[in-house]
Image (cartoon, rainbow, N blue to C red; front, side, top):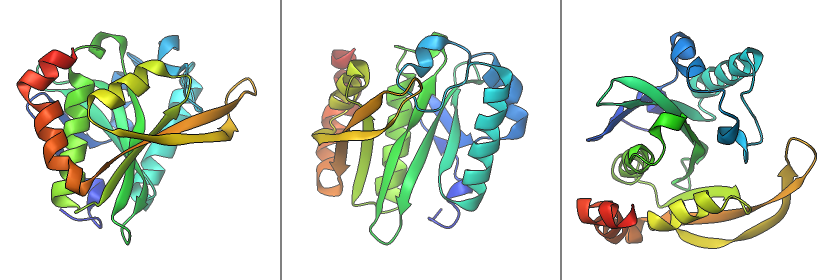
Length: 201
């Protein structure tokens, strides 16, 4: 599996399977997408059926043209779709990408699914794609996301001020995190083993 065939990648871990989003996923996503808390810090929001249609259209188009690879997250215990995540800002020449655009339905939060999805994405990025840098960004006000990124061993790098508009007109500051290839073996061992995951909650 390479950068060229990334849209066809299926990432499997002990807890989750990630595969590219399909139009046939609409009904499953509709069951989990309309929770208002999910979208508090998102630029694009899914609040009504038309928003879900826009999400799917954009996700499928960008996945097929390779600008962003949007996955659904399947919980292997239930075989149900419980959320979505993506690789974006892909830069093959520089061996760099971003993990983000991640959201879960309410029933999958605080269950270990998010951590398992991040592990699958990071393993594939470093071990298969040969990335030198994997980055993450979030709203500076999104304390839960910042805490979660620190708990998986990502390094907080700094804030980019007035980065973009949010719904309602607020200009948001974003904070960048990253994990580098030389750091990954230690980060994986210290933050993704069973003992580390348990201590992190």
